[in-house]
Image 1 (cartoon, helix red, strand yellow):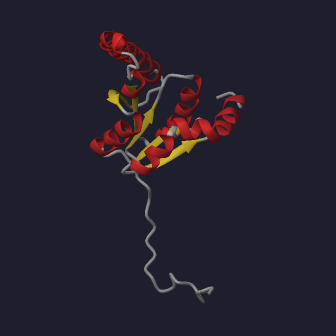
Image 2 (cartoon, helix red, strand yellow; image 1 turned 90 degrees about the horizontal axis):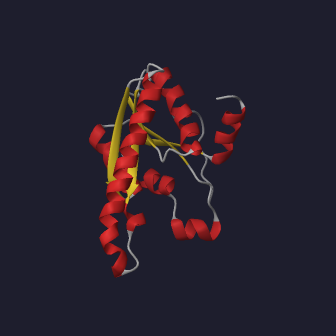
Image 3 (cartoon, one colour; image 1 turned 60 degrees about the vertical axis):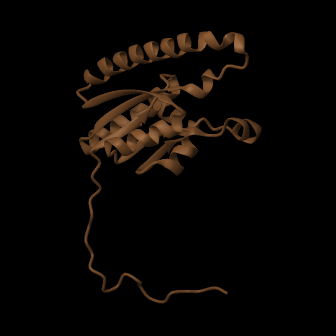
Length: 175
């Protein structure tokens, strides 16, 4: 059975124009060229809303799962190395972004990326997360899942996902 509403359901309702206020934008990164292209979208939004960018790198502990007991002693070394290289990459990104006169904060987290991104957004009171999608489909998506998809489900705020095609188009335009 189809139900149709006649007339304007908002007629007579007070019209208040609400402006969107975005004070901080969380931008997860893995420092890949793809992440850098996504960051350009976040920068444009941050400039438009005079918002702070919170650039976050998550050391994925699931990727450190050790298949053999013999390799277990190496796991702390790799975790430490990933944290060190992540810290250095965040510092370099911060220097580059501060030259552009952006308000910026960097964070390094350790854990499951989707959970850490959502947790940090909640803790910081972030209004928007801007992140890319890898565009996986079929078996690889089933096997690996989608961090962006999980963030959309877990996040306490709006999530803007930038698909691969949009990143490529923006890159070709000289940005």
